Image 1 (cartoon, rainbow, N blue to C red):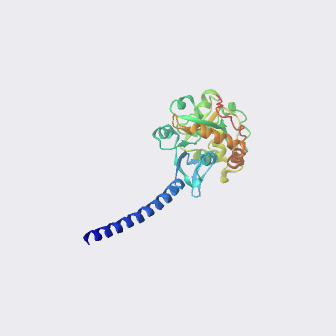
Image 2: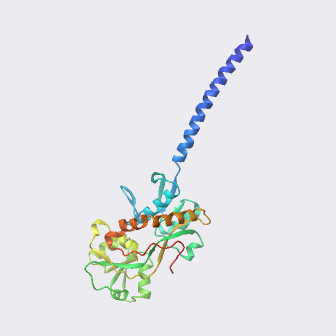
Image 3: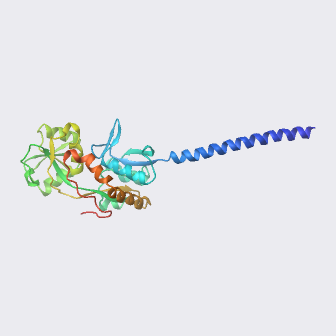
Length: 279
């Protein structure tokens, strides 16, 4: 009798265990499915560059954001699976080396020095150092015309110094803390020109409050090959390159250029070939 009671109890326990196992199996399947749905990719961008990478109350916008989103989709991620992380210029190599991000699309020029530390896919945009001037200013038609002009760039930037050393030695350098401050000075005629990459200038000039007030000089003083930075040795490089080629082929690249730079009449270069780095 005692044995039967034990057996009955054991049977009850066994039945409960089966039920729990079955429930656990169902949960596991759901979890596996949602685990796939909940996968994330972390992408570094600029948060403060209108037209390229900008964080707004509505989300993230800009050419780099469009490129990164397209690439992420080709890698199998939906937009809500992207985690955006701010990648300031001085932090980019370290972020990739530490694995803080999967890749970075943040006006990241490919240079031999950087290639020693990280790998690059691309390039996906060929930009140039240029100047932004007031739309009604016809006195600056070449880099040499910047002599005796007040030339602005952000503190710590080499762009203005490059102009002074190589093209306009009599230019009066003005360092402001941000590009936005330079734009205000340009609008108020406190400065005569702002210099950095033409894509960055076009992004700022495309903002609604500045439309029609500024123009690009079109001087193409340097070549800036924007690439997507990845950790050294990462197998993402080939996959990202395939995604970039697809973006150009299906017209999404050209649309992103027009959407983000169009209001500034940015005369962009054609989409560069993968691996074609202009010196």
